Amino acid sequence: MNSNKMVLAATAAAIASTVFGCKPKTASVVNEAPVTGTVRVCFIPKNTGNPYFDAVNNGFVQASSALHFKYTEQAPAAADATDQIPIIQQQVQDGVNVIAISPNSPDALDPAIRAAEQHGVRVITIDADLTGNENLRSACVLPTDFSKLGASQIELMGSLIGYKGGFAILSATTDAPNQNAWIAGMKEALKLPKYAGMHLLEVAYGNDDPQKSLLEAQSLMTKYPQLKGILSPTTVGIAAAAQAVETAGAAGKVQVTGLGTPNQMRRFVEDGTVQKFALWDPAQMGYTAGYLAEGLAKGTIHPAPGVTFTAGTEGKRVFGANNVISNGPLVVFTKSNIGQYHF
Ligand code: RAM
Image (cartoon, rainbow, N blue to C red):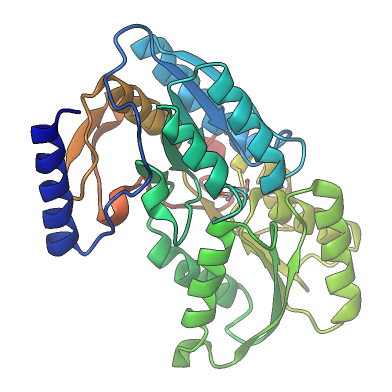
């Protein structure tokens, strides 16, 4: 960047921070020159073995075949931020241009992300954000409007238990930025008079590990014999909770809802263990992030609140505050519509 451009960039950042109230990006990005050859993108999900991230990966693959960028997915075995660090470092060494990461922590990855950006790698977050450290990444693709999700999950649970009784949350990891944002929204919603008859007994953590999630769901049912429901805002947790309820023969007594993939939840909906749950299309999110990654690397997309770009067949996307794109829409799946969804 020459000195004139640096002055312009600093002025633009100052205006953005005044007008939009957002923090300017402070990571010292050494190389922002557009990539001239084939762009190389790596997606780092929370962990392997989760069909949800397989669907996100499919979206990236579609974008990469449309745009011809070189794409790889690299994931740790467990949903742990410390296990994502060596993957980031390896990708930097391999000369990748863009890292798209679903962070397992809002802050544990900071030094690795900073180092990546200092090596000229663009970093975007997807599915979850670096809450409180948003200035470390260029932009973020979230699956839906996070400010509304917690309340809509409480409404789902409430409608299933007649807005009365004790329920538990079965989450992913204690540090997960997306689940923690949603749980904060759930706790806010519970303060509304409509939900005065409902009480949250416990938040349990299954670490997005099917086995641990199953054990946690079973122990919630043992610990709280009057348990009316398990609300699991993770696709791994909700499938495990449904399994636990089905095995215990507790369908109808303990309601299960939250966020799940239709493919994993289909049999529980069909046999009546689960009545309704929600999600977005994970592939759409990966596809959008693929277009964003390519545009960032090529210098054709410059994220700022209000800026738009076209994500192929998905159409127009707009950056909001903190350069977040909320993908959406959120769909509620029931016996009557689940047959239309295949992810
Ligand atoms: C799990 C993961 C992911 C989350 C979905 C809803 O697959 O925790 O991060 O977005 O659930």
